[in-house]
Length: 167
Image 1 (cartoon, one colour):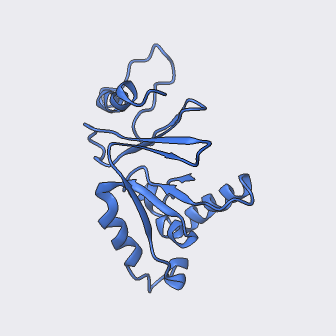
Image 2 (cartoon, rainbow, N blue to C red):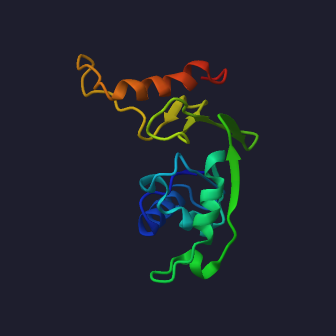
């Protein structure tokens, strides 16, 4: 599983290549999209061409279907040539993905101004939370939070505090 395909096709292809280097001999079966902004989703066509199932918030399904079908004739990408069909798995406010041995939890942030389709990824075994754009703590513990960060921190705290039993 890969989370986000950033910026554009060349950057996404570099992320995909690095993933294959770090985890050799395993296909990328799933790509989780944290949210629909270009800096996180700009290279999604590369993931579609890889044959990965795109895991996204349910509000993104129609958008991703449109992205997958949009012709790229001026600067064709790999998907333009392969014409692979998009495979989409949607999730709501909370989902668990498992292969039987490992579990990954996805939570949608609610009450979050940045976007209403923000998925954060939690690895319960490692107790690691991957959250893009939601919260960056100040450099020192004594520095107060920026006023604009407070609502984002509250939106992030919601699913964590009421989330699955493993959180």
